[in-house]
Amino acid sequence: MEDFGVNPNRKPSQGSTIAAMVKESDMFKPRFKIHSKIVHPTALSIAASTMANSLDALMPLVSSEASTDLLAIFFAIKEHVDAHGIDWPAASGPIA
Image 1 (cartoon, rainbow, N blue to C red):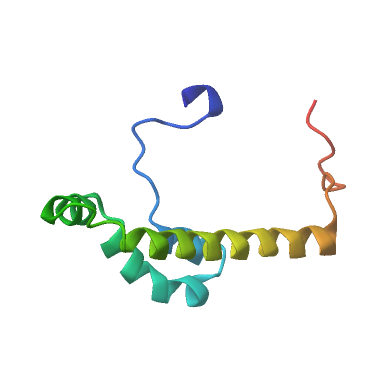
Image 2 (tube, rainbow, N blue to C red):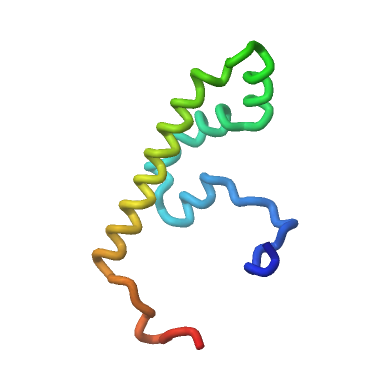
């Protein structure tokens, strides 16, 4: 990770912080509370240990929510590219 400029000791940003940075809090805030409870490692380990196949009912929800979030991200990127294209900003030019 260090080769890519990522500090392996850095604490990950919370989803709500990232959403606020890109001004998408209103869209994602209702999901954060549910997602944080469902996908928390402790919640998953408790759910997985209570009975056999106990995560089977949960996985379609997690999958559906992930798909919805990925589509939202995709369309936000597509909207930006459609509006601005893919190119270096004129002031900075390409990185040598």
